[in-house]
Structure formats: C-alpha cells, structure tokens
Image (cartoon, rainbow, N blue to C red; front, side):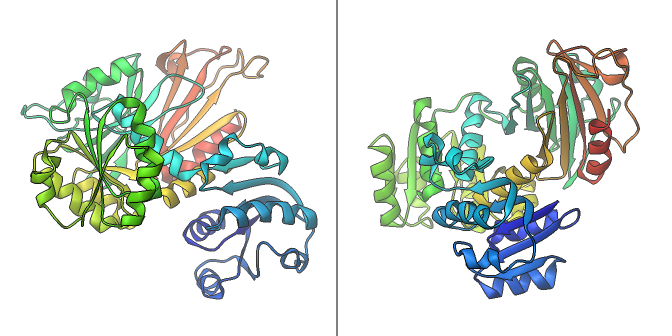
Length: 441
C-alpha cells in the first residue's frame, strides 16, 4: 500500500518503522530535525511541510494514497489534515489519533469520512478498568466475536509442585502462551509451568478464574482501595473510568495545575492530594499502605517503577505501571509489575491492528508485541461452511476452533459450520505465515 503519515513524533516514527517493511511510506512534518532522523533511520520518503497547509500536499507528484494516518500531537491538526488531504489527493482510507474523547459522541468523524479513530487515553483507562473485573489478571483482552477473553496471570504460589499445561486446560480454556525470562513461546501440552511465568489463558471467565486461583495465591481477590500516582490527563481518565466501581480512590500529584483539573473533572468523588512523589511519609500519613492496588500513571517510566517498588515494600501486591517507553517494558514485567501501555504505545498498536485486520479477520498483539493472534469467524453464506480445514506447522503456533463457546484443537473438527471461530496464537516472528494461512482458507 501507499501510506501517508501526518506527524513524525513518537507514534509517527514507530508506525513508519513498522509499516515500511511491506508498504511505501511517506511522513510529513514541519519539524526538520524529526524528519532528518526518520530519513537516516528508515527507508521512506519524508516531506517537510505543514500538514494543515494544502500547498504541502500539492507539492507531491502523485494523485492518490491507499491510507492516510494523522498522528500529530494536535487534535485540530489531525482533523484538519484529513479534510485538506482529501481535497488534493484521492484517499482510500483515513485513520486518526485523538486526545479529546468528546469526539466519541460527535458526528464530526462521520462528516470527515474518517474510517477509524483511536482514543489512546480511553483505551488505556479501559484496560486498567478491566483489571478490577479480574483482580489477578496482568492484562485482559476482549473480542467482539466471542465472550471468551485472553487474560494473563503471573504464577506465584508457595507449593513446591509444578503444574503441566495438560492438567489445566479443557474445552473451556486453553493456555496459548507463556512469557518466561523475557522470552515468549506457545507451550506444548506436556510443558511444565514455572513459578514467575506469565501465563496467557484464552477461555471463559469462570474457567480462567479457576486456574488463576491455583496459579496465583498472592494477588487480592477483590479491590476496594486504589492509589493513583499522577493526575495528568491520562491519570484523570483512569480515575473517571473507575468511578462506577464504587472504589475508594486517592490521587497523588505534585503539580497543582493537574490537581485542579482533576478536581474539576472528578467533582469531589476522588481524594486528590497535592504532594511531591518522593515523600514516602504519604504511605504512612495518608494511609496509602492500606491500598489494595496502586497505579503509577506518570509520564516517566523510571518514576513509575520506583512508586511500584515502594508500594511492594509496604506489602501492596497489585501494582500497575503505565509503560510509556517500550525499552522499560521487560524490566517492569521482570519486577512483577502489571504493565499497561501508555497513550503513545497504545496508539501505535491500535493503528497497526486496525490496518492488519479486515471485516473478516481480526489481528491482535499481546505479550508486549511478542505474541500475535488472528481470529476469523465463519459468517452466514461463507464459502468455508462445510469445508474441511487442517492446521499447518508454523513454529509452535496453536490452531484452535471455537464452536458454541467450546474450544477444540482444529484437527478435532471435520468440517466448518456457521458461527465457528478460527483462532491462531503464535510468536510475532510467524505473523506473516499465520496471516497468509488464515486469509487464504
């Protein structure tokens, strides 16, 4: 595809880096320093110009693009650029990143013919909220095709025995991935599960909760008291998303401006404390040590890690950190911190998943991008109904079939029926092969 990206910041750079392997990419920005870095690092075309100026696009020597992605730091620039580019070029699809969630209920996106808008702060806030439904979870992924969830659980129990994969799985749940010492793999049925493994379970809520109670004896079974370090825009949206959970929430912030903004947004429903992060007396004086869970939502990953480790010293087991820089992702995991993607990383993956998915096939990343899954539902009138489908050997990937909410290994099923859902889990290195298999059925 021919892809045009408006914005050469963190998200624009990472998208260009990933998409340039298979597509023709051009990035537009008025910051010449950012463009020079892109030009040096990646084999793409860069254009120096204002994304809000029609002359920028008129200078191009082509008439159309397959995909336009607007990811500058300005909502106004992103919205206006999607309108201006279409006045100059023929654009097949448009994707936009927005910070203002007011556009969720607006007709503006439809009027501008925007195909997909990502609201990364809202996405991150909802991921944190999902942890309250599954207190022992490290991460929760949901799907529109099925009620089954993909949930990761950290193995931490005192017993000396080791579980095997085949002792835990059945038609309601499957173990589809393990992260062990920074490496991800899809386990065989005979593999043992080690302590400190991060285990990825795909199945019904009840079945996953039953396994979680065996694998994790330390995380709380319910969460009532929350501490959020930070009151920036993302932290505010996390707190707002949690209001309907009837929790006792405290926010700690040293910037008085953020405190005032949070107070106005949350309307007194959250206890906001203006204090420097470094003051550990807060754990004693403000009762933070009694929290069931802390969320470090700052923009500095090192500070987020420190606050999580301080909380652990006070015996708080459920510690969550927003991950802004993927260089810190593995360190956070290794330290037993529940990691939630920050706004920029969340936007990056959400856009990539949308580009790679279709109306038939859904693609999702997990385990910090080390794992990949593809899901394909058999809709009415599909040419696959009645067809026999066999899995192939693609690394250690696992091929499953959901039928009436029961999980089967694909070889167990003779022919496909309407409503069946094919699901493949594998390492990211096998993405191209898995994608080719599921699309060419």
